[in-house]
Image 1 (cartoon, helix red, strand yellow):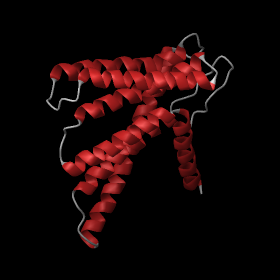
Image 2 (cartoon, rainbow, N blue to C red):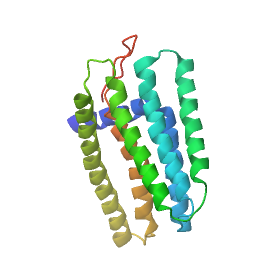
Image 3 (cartoon, one colour):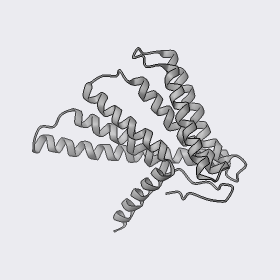
Image 4 (tube, rainbow, N blue to C red):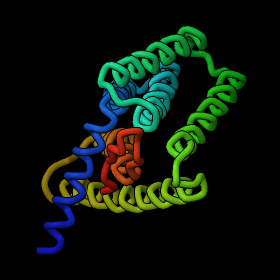
Length: 210
């Protein structure tokens, strides 16, 4: 019974995270869909699209934290989401749609990821009783909890695919790639966000930590 309750709590946490970060989840869905296409086509011609979408994931998550910390109105939330979407488009047009691997672009993108990751942790602590170290430890714990559940889930799905392939009928090798894509691109980030604690805003509105 306790196991069922834990599963229900985790499922509710995923739903709450999706409501809290709608644009972020939308970006993740697009990433998962694009990765599915890339796996089927066995190509990496759209890697810059993936980079841009990941930047969008980070930007939209930071925008949500800015809204929670400094704003109250729904219109302001929509404006921040629109701003993060615009910045994502500007980033895409900056790096272009070239399929040639560019080390400089990769390094610059990695720096952007790092800056946004720090902002994701830092913004909720601005003029708040929550310190940066506490926010960092919360994100650190959420990250490793997510890694643990991701490994367990992928191992379970992989075992099922292997069993079906050995006992029932042949399974395309791409099934493992697709399952890994859905787990890593979609489930894991949302699961991580579900463990991101809510912070008090100007009206002391809070989001519960799953």
